[in-house]
Image (cartoon, rainbow, N blue to C red; front, top):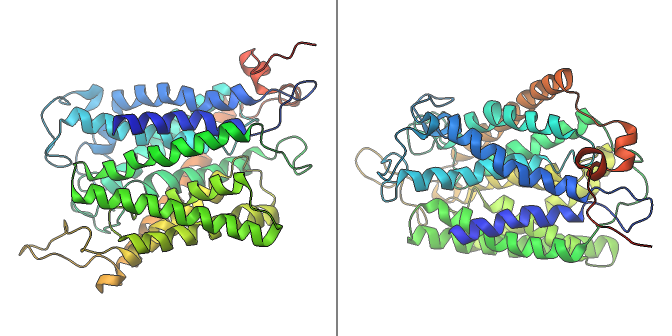
Length: 416
């Protein structure tokens, strides 16, 4: 799955290029600043993860956050960790989980693109990882975590590959950031058209393929469960693409490329928590619902409340992640994942389709905790960053564009 991880990382750099128009002249340069957010987070989060992040997420067995048993990657080597992945080296598991830790704050950066100071973004990322991501990862995936479904959680919430941990926390935090920072200069105004849809299209295609590494890889083995997650992921993305495109086609009279790739991402988000628990046709249904719901969130809800979520991180990831997590409680079945058993070894029913209606309540609890932690944690972090470094760039810097004002460079040089 390593090559798939690389594809998804590359797509993080390509997709943000669609952020704004830039054709030379007096139009501000914003491309490099946006891409730099995703790129630098791969470096920053990696270091935090090595120092304490992995240990806080997967060390110990408390309900809310791990301990420092694995700090500085102490005791993380070639021997497997039987609590999480008994057939692969713990170091492999560690670096695999790092990919989730990297991508999550990178998603948030889409909401505050073009208006947050680079220094503030770095501090925000460090604090957000410590206060929001690592505790949430431990609660859902860590041993003894409050929401862990297989290792002693009080409210077992099914999240195969990051619906609550990655998408709800990042999407909701993105909305908080957009509201706290305020709108970009001139927003709302003339529609900000994509800078380069061709590159965005390539990024989305890479993302679709790279997502298999996260979802199928979460089986932590080359197994039938990995195959099932792979199939569910693909089917969910396909149905969501169609859902978004047809909703857009009906409303606007034309199906757009941007709508198609947006629908694809919405489906990948929604199927993520369910991928290791649902059959192919429920995966299609989850994807279809996500395509339509996320389209409405991005076009109707965002317009109604006029918040400036530049890359629709909340409309796609926050809304799609919540929808997917709840529908996981409906369609999860032991026919796909028989790893949950009682003390006598009997396979337990998983979701509503298995006769376990209570699982929807557990999924709701997981969503609520993710929402509350993201809202409260992000507000505290933004206030700290604002009081120490200042969050928003000045009007002149924003007008000039962050490429020049923050990095002293331009993405494109036009010669007269």
